[in-house]
Image (cartoon, rainbow, N blue to C red):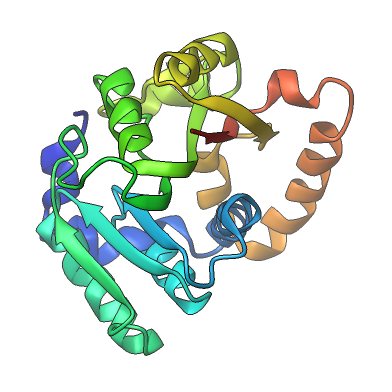
Length: 234
């Protein structure tokens, strides 16, 4: 998987959220959390798995909403940050973090009510395998995001040291069907790539995001969106 060693570095884990979700990046954080909650709510009493949970942004959020959630990641350093976040939020008794491989999920079939992965499929070398595993252990919801091939993300990709896997809509729909899933809903957003927003101070990011959102809500919005959120069911 792309960037596997990079994401496991302790210094990367410690700085991960400050570098990505401060300043203009807070708009990304807010939108991603909104997407997860829109797809999976209500969460009270649901058994949920987050694949590639990283520092636990969504794991803790779901625990706060009453989910019985497990966050799994390959990086011990990221998981350490997640456990600290859970303690700070007072939900460390309501969730579990574990280290594991997304290609071989250590759970029986239909074990979870919902399985989701954010910021994961752009790094996946075998996306069909990962999605099939997510579908196998879920008895209802499967939710994930992708970066889009025909968008400004393709230009930004050239600046990244390890790049990202970009997807067309048809490719994702084929992956969903091959995993035995049915697409419930797809939302498309962010004409400008995430990396652009992370470089901006909040006061400048807000009005630019307003314009971005207006374009996204126009007839051409879906075609030029750089990120998509996919909600499927088993």
